[in-house]
Image (cartoon, rainbow, N blue to C red):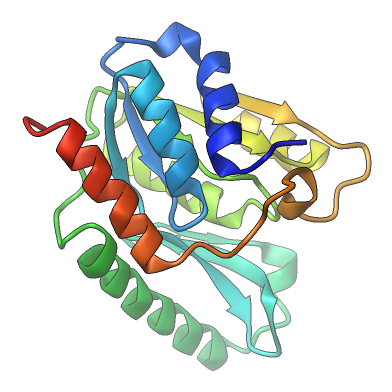
Length: 213
């Protein structure tokens, strides 16, 4: 059990000790992954930014989804789940998420581009893996951008999905794999939805601590 995302980030950072001062780049997936990623990047003394990846929600069940899209257009579709979504509906949902990605880049990253990924080790961080779609799309973005290695690092994930993601990434670090797993929130004592304002505050703190970069 983690006290909160800050606690989870600090524990995750220690599990990534081998990347300390390695020149790696930590990319957090907003919004829940940002405080976790901040703690990881701070401990490892790496560069830090945000990678925007969005779930493609079912129209009648937005808590679940049939895939995800990353900010460069990298698309991951769960073939089985996507069969339930008519093509026109799918196109509409994808376009809605493209617009939300643009908004998040503008609002959370100040319209700045992603740092160059080519030839770098990228550590993708979130507060946990549920269905895994947003992480799958993020991995595809990193591959397309020429990252030398893609490491996925999360506090919690289910056994099946972390194994699947581990086959796509060059490495995966998961602190907790509960035998009965139903939601990321189950391993956090203090769980809440993260706001845009909190993300902006964390990134402003990072910039203040790292004025040169």
